[in-house]
Length: 69
Image (cartoon, rainbow, N blue to C red):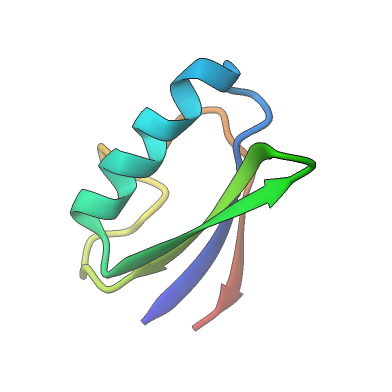
């Protein structure tokens, strides 16, 4: 299972929870990264055979780093 760190800083703060909800619904597990009471990133455990970064649920324009495979 691949694990990704997705930086949400390019998304309006009021839309970040929606992104997390969508990712949670389509992935194995997510972890919210909170810094100073603000959601700044999400860790996504991606178990789908579909490529995460080209999937329809990937938040376009957000920097994404593969942190485990």
